[in-house]
Image 1 (cartoon, one colour):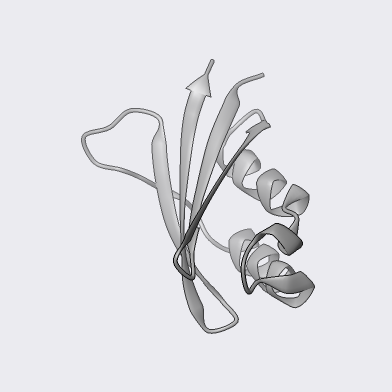
Image 2 (cartoon, one colour):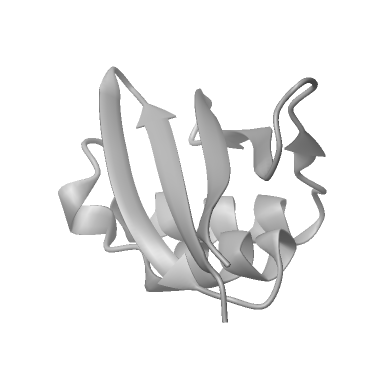
Length: 90
């Protein structure tokens, strides 16, 4: 199963973690489920729930000119979150 590196930019902080998943979409959802909101400045459990709900309805976009790199924007408690998903192992 591939490993995906997920990079979250939120409220001036950058948070990086990895998950194993079959697809980039599954990786994004699994990452959100496993996310510890206490280590993300200003997120909290309500922010995590908001993020999970928003990601369930979004489709990450392949970044033009790159291979196996996707991104998407989400709004968490009124703040923008940029999420990059990189397939780092096949």
